[in-house]
Image 1 (cartoon, rainbow, N blue to C red):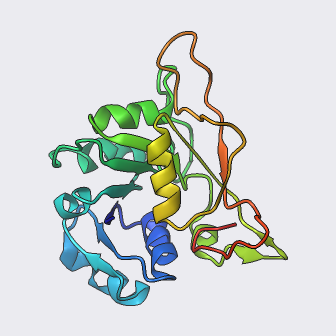
Image 2 (image 1 turned 90 degrees about the horizontal axis):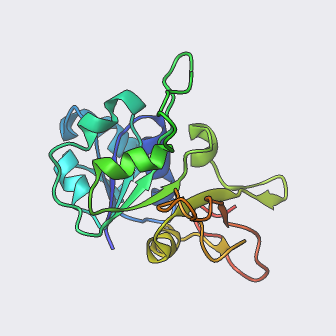
Length: 205
């Protein structure tokens, strides 16, 4: 199972650090090309390599974290998704004001899903500051909790397994957005909840 990262800003770099703690390999990319990532790759560790957007997008699981207004450009012209998994770590806000962007009643991952037709989208890693995401998730006698949601149960399970995350499920389904007017509203499932006897993975809380 291969992992790609599109976006080398604070969140993308933090996710790379999360992976490298246990030697999980990934290809990280940005809009400026792999040469601009040489310093970051040296800092993060040997399991992370620099590549083009296209190379990162060919991975089985692709983590996307870019500025909201650059999202369309970042996901344009990439290989067909063909059922591969997108981890949507984006929020519809922009620095420095962090004012919410008007999505005309849509949820943000619905917008992202439209940009990656054929992909299975899982929303995750978007609710923590970069420095907290990159830090050791075990602190103060507890373990950090991450939340995720998605319409595809198998995709959610794959994200958890291949990021070495332990899951405590609060419900059997946690959709990103309702596909039908009568469909259940999305809920969130907990990643990394304490489980007795289970060792900690790199993202476990």
